[in-house]
Amino acid sequence: MAAAVGIAVSTIQNIWKENGLAPHRWRQFKLSNDPSFANKLHDIVGLYVSPPAHAVVLSVDEKSQIQALDRTQPGLPLKRGRGGTMTHDYKRNGTTTLFAALNVLDGSVLGRNMQRHRHQEFIRFLNTINRDIPAGKVVHVILDNYATHKHQKVREWLTRHPQWTFHFTPTSCSWLNAIEGFFAKLTRRRLKHGVFHSLVDLQAAINRFIKEHNDNPKPFNWKADPDEIIAAVKRGFQTLESIH
Picture 1 (cartoon, one colour):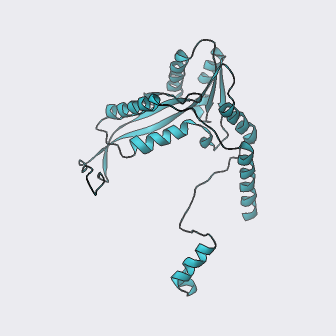
Picture 2 (tube, helix red, strand yellow):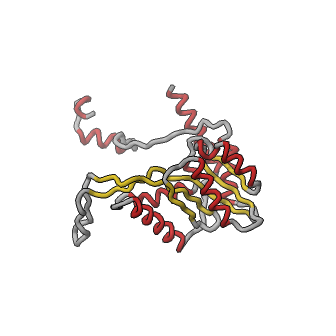
Picture 3 (cartoon, rainbow, N blue to C red):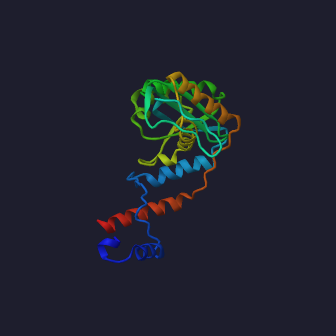
């Protein structure tokens, strides 16, 4: 910009600083077009902050296509003055899909590794959860709009298990699903810099991470005001309309 307008670089930098501008930074966003956005938001936040008595509230999703990446050469170990290293290239040793359910009340996670993420695997995971639910408990499940979650066979399963109720997040609102925070932590702390010589190594690492998480779980704590979120979305649409 300094070259284009013919002034000093420092002048441009001062103008940007004074006006709070940072053109080198970008943030991604997506506004939900769901016509029931407000109702779904209040419904799910209500489950987080005031769950029904004698009920279990679960946040459920799958993290698909987790790759077992092995590096082409061994990394150099951590030592004084130097962090650990790894090669930029890798070898693929297969993929797994993690089905996970976060118990909102106590923060514990139930997870199962499976090869695929079809409705068949999802139903198997639901059966796994159902076996661990105490008799007489009502189960509220928060999940996204992935087609697998709405498959006809899944709806038939719900009919056979009337104590279960699905609560779908608004479209383009995966951030509303509490399990996404656990997936982000798993990626950041275990998968991103992991070295896995086989698919079995990857699945074992995921299972260890879940066990370590469950050794000291913390209840999920929702803090954002849903009315403020709705107002922010409205401002976002107004801004988009003013631009176009």
